[in-house]
Image (cartoon, rainbow, N blue to C red; front, side, top):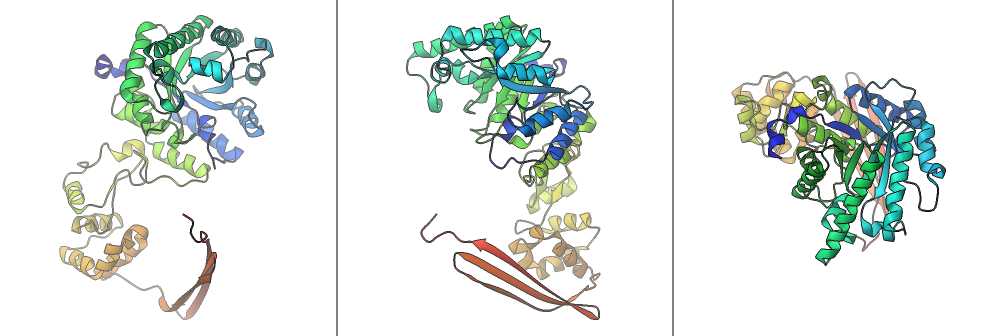
Length: 464
């Protein structure tokens, strides 16, 4: 790993999005066909290397997305389709998955296989040799059709370290060794069949970076002519760290999902991995201009799935470069960047200094400047005194417009747009609580009366 840290730019690392396959294997991952195609176009414009659009024949949505995407000029980005090896009791040219992938006309096939001996016996209900033959024939068949073939080695990390159900290690050393030996026979068979790349999968997300690094170092050392990738899940909140460890140890492609969406706790956040490898580790993954669009892209993906961008996401979160602490804000004003891990603009984000109960004059001065105000020291002190309650309860976090009005009042520039005549809030109900708000405003010579209501469903008594 040390040699890689010294000269990281000499090895090309490929980015692989599994947003429309692995990323959608969770609840409430709904997106319109138009928005899905918009994201595919963005992926290509940014310069991603692969986009896996789904499990072949999984749904009408997936089939339509493949059909529409394959008509586009996507530059260097390759469309990939996901499927399984042939079944145990069928001929390779009769496999529904393999035939469908070929029929699609995609340039890349991603084939998942069982690499852990336990799964061959208990999930496939097959034998060691039969599984190896299924892998060999499936990869060979796709290569004969002219496709690039990536083999996803399911449960690879657990197979390597001899772990079974619930991530528990097999009791006997011999049993653990048998699983690793069989895993290596799977690797050799896929290579023999002509696979272009093998993706080491941390399917349960239970691996640690040091495990991933050790495994990849041994695999790349034993099979120097083979391309290896990594596919990580986030069940231990280590998916990004594990992916980085794999790349530093020799993997030349990484699979991930934008914003870390995916099954259970999600997949490795593709965008965070890109930002970390490029800005911190020196790999050239995307053009600089594409890097500056990643925050916009991250937020676009979130909203396309009817989700809000997450505040605390590294690099791209709304608060990724925000500080509310008075001491930190003071330092940032004097020495910009002291509390930021990289320049926000490199990923299209921006710094933010907010105001709450942790803040001081420096926060207020910086936030005021962002809104075009330059209050004097006396005006700052007056603002903090007059609006002490608002600062204490976090009102300026919730509503920046309230802060603008506070600045106007402190600097003598406030001009009221309306006068509050009266307001009223009424609540009531049983298991369903209704709230009705009424407000009357005087705006110039006219009055405006607005009524609005909301409903909340209460939990039954005694429930948690």
